[in-house]
Amino acid sequence: MLLTVSGPAGSGKSTTAAGLAEALDLEHISGGDIFRELAAERGYSAVEFNKLAEEDDQIDRDLDRRLYTIATERDDVVLESRLAGWLAGDHADLRFWLDAPISVRAARIANREDKTVELAREETEARERSEALRYEEYYNIPIRDLSIYDMALNTARWGPDEVLDIMTGAVRSYRSEADEGQYTVDGVNYDF
Image (tube, rainbow, N blue to C red):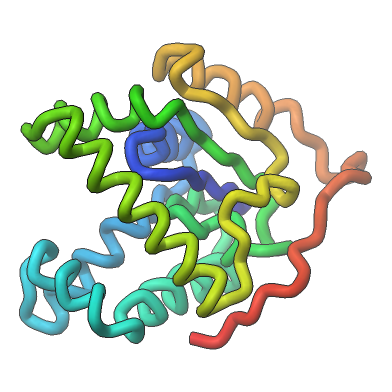
């Protein structure tokens, strides 16, 4: 089984994906971890590599290629990144999108990164605008189009345990042989 967990920064995707993998005895693969691996392979810290990625689009493409390869070649995985649902495409059994209002996400980010909520919000909004443009330009992915996802959850409405329970319940009740509703992922340019 291949599950994807996507969403913007501060939505709870990393925590939820790790919990989902543990609950279902699947491997959790994080786009953030792969990004850090790429940085280490090239002799950079994650912070240095992130700055470099702003100028070098090949870094995003290398990360996305690795995620795509995992999605198309591996099984028994929870794949987590902003683009995981789009990159996995029709290979995913279930695709989840997590989100929360920007005020909630900014507060979560501020708490974990020890910065003001205002700064976290400003940086997050700028990052999301930039990412949306890049995803459209690179791959023809309209990141805010949620039609490909099987479930979209506002993680500010429930606590982390409840979000995990909802998703775990959905996966456990899923029967591929009775599935008539998978949306196909069309129009993506997987040009890495």
